[in-house]
Amino acid sequence: MAKEKPNSESRKDAHKLQDLEIEHTLKQIKNKILVMSGKGGVGKSSVAAYISVVLARKGYKVGLMDVDLHGPSIPRLLGLKGTIEPGAIPGKAGPVRYMPNMEVISIESLMGEKKDVATIWRGPLKIGVIKQFISDIEWSDLDFLIIDSPPGTGDEPLTVAQTIPDAMAVVVTTPQEISLADVRKSINFCRQVNMHILGLVENMSGLQCPYCGKLINIFKKNGGSITAQKERLKLLGALPLQPEVVNDGDIGSMKFLDNDQLPFTMEFNKMVDEIIKSVENRKKVSLKSKKVNASDTGKKVMKGVKVFVIPVSDGKLSSHFGHCEQFAFVETENGRIMDKYEKTPPSRDPGVIPVWMYEQGADVVIAGGIGDRAEQLLREKGVEVISGAPMDAPELLVNQYLADTLISGNNICDH
Image 1 (cartoon, one colour):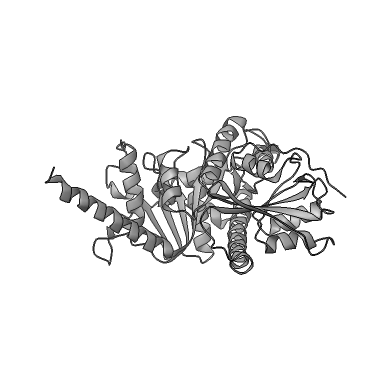
Image 2: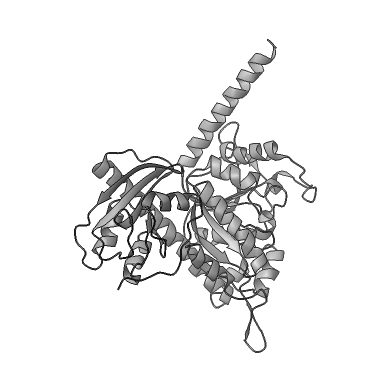
């Protein structure tokens, strides 16, 4: 036993050192985006690769980290031939350079000629490799780190969520129900680990007939947009099936991205613009919330804090949002209610209440009925809006939201 103690202490020191390296590396990366899906075969890796390339072409410094350890496909999609080499810092390795401002790490880049050999690893080893991809790789100061995760909600996405607490998610699906059923699990996963979802991407969203030009909905229609609406999420884009994209992907070419007239390329560029806009809005809301919490409440902004705002009358949710005289503010931390108080808006003139809520640091508004303009103003400022909620006590509604059991119905607009 006496001989094992130094080894145990040494392991603890190594873990501490790795945690410090991870913290240092993540501070140099402005935005981290996890691209995930509930089901395999929906084009998640393609979406992750193409997002990275388009961002890099727009001038951003981009890193692409492939944590799909059992089925890495990023190097082949990109036609990446290089291998990982020693970095300038002793003990670190340099990622593979794809473009002057884009670098990539994948387990396949470490395998040399053994690219078709199966990776048969259990959870602890996979967790260790993902952490090493951050701590032991000499990443540049990046604007974006795009992370390609395997399908599902297992070790890899969970490790990313725990290791990179400010990561945001882009969830990829196809229109058919069997894919959407699994995507709802991914959405629930993100909400349980407090990962902000930038939005959904519907891939394989119809094929344009090359002869008649008619759109053929091979995998059904509008599944992604319906799910996004039900889950109160943004649909970032609906990407059509395109033979040119499939052919170029097989040979590791990005040639299709040069064709601005290609329907897929046009929609993909719009989608990346939506991602950039969502990230920027998220930053503005975060900064605003921190300022409000620091100046108005004097409370320290902590990880996992959410502020819920609910129009109330006689201690319960009021269906008259625009005419309500009192709003309940319920603060939660890591899924638990910490405080509740009521505030009176400065005015009930159109457009005043949503701006006031935002300035008070609102993250989620739960309403019975809310006008379209008020809802739009809140969503534009990054505030989540739940409408058609039952007329229950604010604490009960918040607990139902946190437990993912809050039932919302039709928006009963109060004007």
